[in-house]
Length: 342
Image (cartoon, helix red, strand yellow):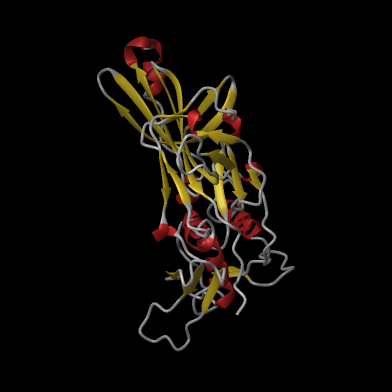
């Protein structure tokens, strides 16, 4: 979730002597790696490196968001007016799609437009929040020369964007909350290996403050806050400092709201050791294991018998001599935060 996934295959050269010459013709960023499961495409992206030894040929690839990491922004970024025909303010997912589209389709640099064939495969799950985003330096004509993926990571994810890939699709979505319907409910019996149930006080927060007070002169600084007052925790505050330029009070409010998610009440986490896997009887299908998906986990058999709402953040699948093994990483959700009443 909110990252570029990686995949690799290792081929024993002795098992395919007739294919050796073809493997040597693989070129990074010209060819792509496609992975199928039961004849269904589950992962795809550009080859970034090949490594050949005397006995094996290894192909390393990253998912299609790698194209965004290698494309430098060439557009003025001023999503401030609702109804603007080119750069409208609106859901952050729409702003993300617009930035991707304008850069990948830029006829001055992208020849042919959408050379990487990703625009038809963008899907969105819009949040209801109106977002304004501007990154124009000192003039309205300034262009921020950074990779497009950096814009998503540093500017739009803090404003509520959540992205991942499924096959060739780029999913521009919103963070799930405890109010969303869970895909499935897992018990600890569905997780192979030892686990720990952790009530993590330092990660908890009743109110999150976000501010741009990062310089000595704080006269023109702004702030936003989100969370809950009059709780049993009292003043359990947290502070987020934004290094981003041009963030006003509205932007900082969105940053505070995004940072507060999952922190109230104090999160109860399940720690799964590295190498732990889902059991074969876990009530989820492979195609449902998409980063960002909402799941419940019941801590049966422990002193802390609770049902915890989780967001799936990582899926790790390995195929080898032992067959298919699937591991997941989960982060706890919390109550959906709102600005506290003064």
